[in-house]
Length: 423
Image 1 (cartoon, rainbow, N blue to C red):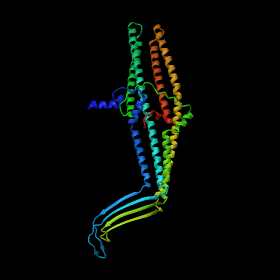
Image 2 (image 1 turned 180 degrees about the horizontal axis):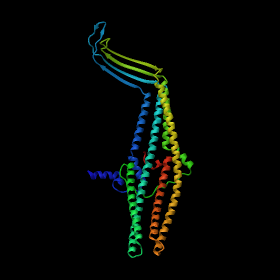
Image 3 (image 1 turned 90 degrees about the vertical axis):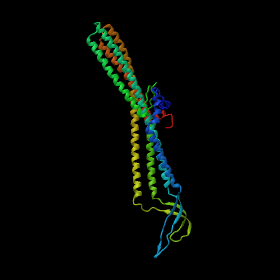
Image 4 (image 1 turned 90 degrees about the horizontal axis):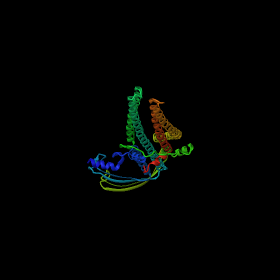
């Protein structure tokens, strides 16, 4: 049974279950979109809103009821007790609205807006899931590369320590040189262990989105160009799903106000009844009957409930308008922050690469000068540490630039383009 289960899981999740790391960011996103519970909740809210739309449209359909009854009865009229009877009745009623003065139209309009809001909210959830999963995958891939850098640094310092000890035995280096090399080696070992712990945390963070263990070794980082201008990015943000959902919520709130207001209007209904009864108080005979009535109902006073409904609906309008303003301001801030971050990240990446080139040249020079006797072991260790720091700076700048691009796409609503399916 277990080999069969593993085979099935490998066919569904070949990378995550069978151990092969994922090399494409798209695979991580697809897994998150299939397993993140927020999307399941969003789909359930859509179905709930669609059920409300069906209920709202019921005002135009008839209401049909069948009533059947039987039992025992005794009647006493002016002291005269009739024999016990077994009254029976079968009644069919049909209540059809002829004109509801806008009730059904207002209810269906509000329900339709709620469906649109739920669908837009699901798209906003898709964007949030993609951004979270992509960031977690990039952090995991970065953790792998940082660990590799730390391991390389440990190996370099291990060789340096061995070289220093050899030179010490030949009398070329001092005990202080050996102690300094050993200190740097111990620090590198601690940094490698910290990088290993960071990698474990990154894997756990990614599993929160994918629902299954997954390792990531990306072949390349997403190359996301910056928008043409800040104004263009802000314009794109107007179509962001979260903002669209807030607009639909406001429209639904206005429709709720209209629905509450039409309750003051009269209603015109057609009521038909077809029935038969036997053994009533008037006769033991069977009686068949039917009736058809046009009923006009004019609301006069409902204990203040209609006024309360209108006030409550208007309060929801004010709340939805405030939420819309808040969401628009937040998106504007995100776009501006992402724009500034992408610009800064480009400059930082350029400077980090220049730093790495200079550190590499400096290390080569220090190694040559150490051989010539014009540099000390400390100088070499410092140069190696600077190159290690420069490598990490380049790594961090590259991944910050990629994550900044994803954040810009999320703020403008374009990140959903990473989803290949109808989520």
